[in-house]
Image (cartoon, rainbow, N blue to C red; front, side):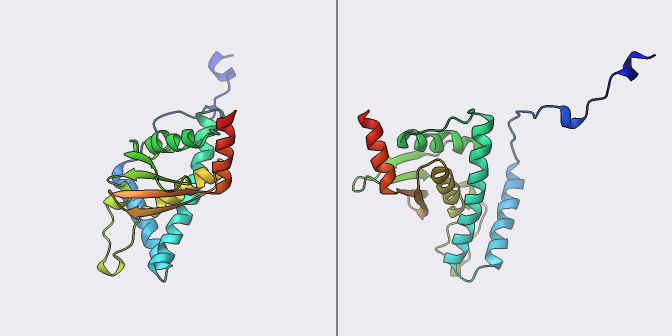
Length: 188
């Protein structure tokens, strides 16, 4: 009896998942995102409707990305402090998505519920040419949807919008309950 024939051949399903970098080429990403914008645009009647659809798709991506990241990388340990969660998004999550950290994280001076994540050159806007009749369109609302889903699914309910200011600024406005809970945690 041959020794090799007695061993069962291992199936690809028996092999562990590789933890490679999982990088995607920039050209592929640009093509895929362009198709998402065109798909959404063909099903929209206004700029607001288009931005809403892009935000919804971003929220779907954010929900899946959050689950995948915490299961694979962090053994399901999620942040409970507001600032730590924002720093996680600015650095770790942004590196996973775009290969670099977001440029800045700022807290609004006049509103304790509002934070800004600033990105000078958003990748999603890099390869999109906006027609003159849709001049206020900001495709970075897709990223805002990702941020909103990550925060909300992590227990930090917030509304996130994208604005043209210092490049692209994501305005994160938290529910009052988040600020109250964070202050309670600080008092411990």
